[in-house]
Image (cartoon, rainbow, N blue to C red):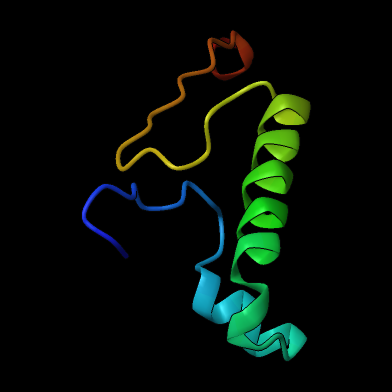
Length: 66
């Protein structure tokens, strides 16, 4: 990473992605674009951010009172 580059916001690291798909270093820009856009698309579909460190979801239910 260069001095001004931000780390990619993806569900899988670039290195793991390249290893699985056997992509060489010449395709880093395209692979990075694919990872970022797919992560964004998945999050839009789920309607939530998936890369939070701590996330708690509380579901109110009256089931246990029956």
